[in-house]
Image (cartoon, rainbow, N blue to C red; front, side, top):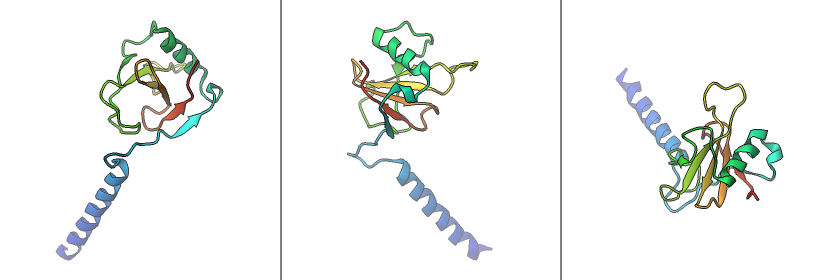
Length: 129
């Protein structure tokens, strides 16, 4: 039993190390924010409503709207704390905030990202007017 345990543990350690290297960007690199959406037509209609609220400074329907997004998942380019803000994109029929968000970067916002899966992936939105 001991003869097989050590190779299995070594293999497991190598696999965990390889996986962590995929998820952690190297220092000095930026993480691409997935795909660029050329038009809000490719997104749920509620995205345009949330973008309009952001442009006008609210009022926002959720008290969490406008809070600092910490980018803990490291899916967006690394920026100083406070650079990113998050806003809820309503999900019709949801009994809570749902999974859809717009993340803005800068003050005033210079970049916009959309996530429909609660921060697992992002799409860059073209600059809004």
